[in-house]
Length: 135
Image (cartoon, rainbow, N blue to C red):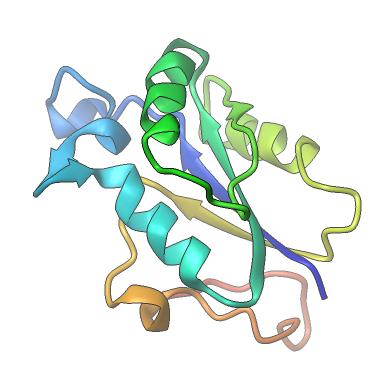
């Protein structure tokens, strides 16, 4: 089973009230998006993580990603859209052809608890094609 994760970081986070998009605001010593990225990469069942970033933030993302070193699971960023559903669509279009499952996570809400707190990817949900994951 090949599992891909879309890390949605294209939102503006206007209610957050910061000049930067919410995903790029530093909390502690690093931008919020990195907490989720690190957790998703640590999940053994996830084979690749595709960040989905607003076109205006692609440069910011590339600069941030360059400082992360070699992360084999990290795929090139997809360009997000005006609305969340547009960003999800863009991320789905960027999936590798062999992806069987997709985890979708909003970078504005970090996953707590390390890899153990990441959404489960232990197989398909019963009776449907989607489920809400959580710590």
